[in-house]
Image (cartoon, rainbow, N blue to C red; front, top):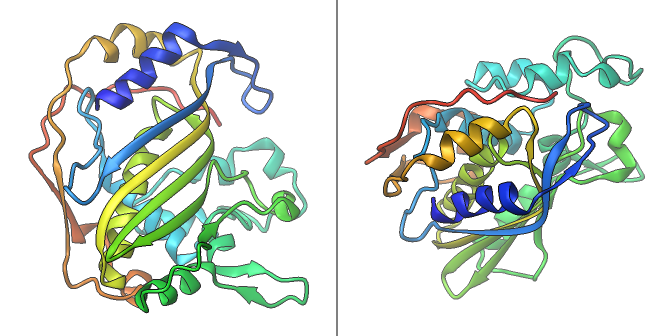
Length: 283
């Protein structure tokens, strides 16, 4: 929480106004932020200065790991974050590659599970990572990336948190996640949960201890219509200690994640929080 709040305060104090062409809303922006999550000691990075709903973030992660391409698929597992980008993003609605209501196109998990080779066959990046790590192999390229510039026009949104690199040191697994753009009041809450849970899950199914998740953000920003709530409300609140996350120990394979795992397999204890803050969302 201290690192999160320090980043928020840094943006308020040092940020530069930048026009955002996609949303039409100015952003107060800083470049380069690094956050670290202690997954091994289960310091779950759930925001305490406002009530946070962590299960939707986990549901979104599960959808990515399954390679979902439809907002309807995400809704079915308890995540509504893709409804707007699939159905209200004007550029995507006018894109001839869109295949109808709720279609997201080839974004995020589609690239992670079905990266298209020039010959038309698909590469399952996540399967390669899990198979290697399960055998104790780290070839210094245990990477899953959603960033495919050659197919940007085939999806509703370029990925924000775009690349995850796993590193195995002895029997401890670490994760470094890279994010090109971050809506700090709204998106970062989701993103840091997902970094933490991704490392915890992959460590669990590959038989390793979880270490640290390192989260590297290039462009961290607060939208102009979010600034008063951040500056005058959230940053005035004192944080509580981090809660802890419990994951169903019966989750043992990638196939488990693909088939039966749900948000019911995750629970949080010791979560104290302030009142919710309804930040506006920019499409």
